[in-house]
Length: 250
Image (cartoon, rainbow, N blue to C red; front, side):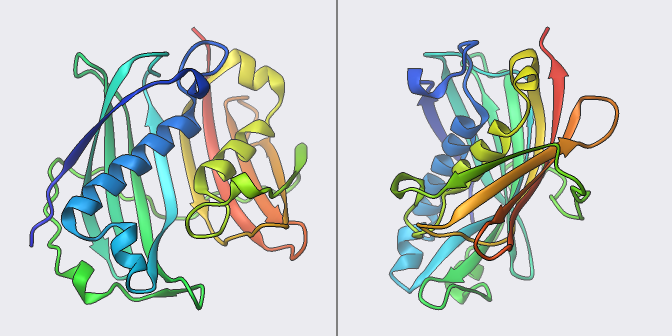
């Protein structure tokens, strides 16, 4: 079977906007994951299809670039397609459009397959490999390579993991990590600047009852880039690494 792109439409709801009335990035990433779910469902390789085999999808990395944010009640369309495969890494791209088909943002992501009982990554199973990757659009550059390491935190917060932080895989959901990373930045950054790019790597899972320490620091002297690191307070294990790029609000 050949893969094919999918399109999903969403209306930006009041609980998904910031004080400017625009969709938050965690909300947009949630839409993208929902669009990916719909596309994989149509291809017979959704998370539910994997769970029947004791497997699941896990997001390993995502790089998002936003040109303009949709506002409250805006109708948006998210196009998504399987864009490539490298060993155990399965790539998926996204493009976000408004009603006028203006490109608002785009993203590329990397997915892995995990054994839900052993909590270990596995080789891509044959029934997924059988879905031939046929990109519906020009693939975005794959998200790969290392990010700069945060050496000394300038801001830090502790985030106890609560019941509503947990997803279907029984670990902290990806968008919650993203939210915690952004929430750690100084208020002046969040109020005066607009997030344009994020590259986020999910390195390990955390469970109910753990506490996540979210740290951030300026990446350079420009005031436009920040490094992020989320770790488990209990084990000291690094959970998430990210870099964000911001622009002054116009």
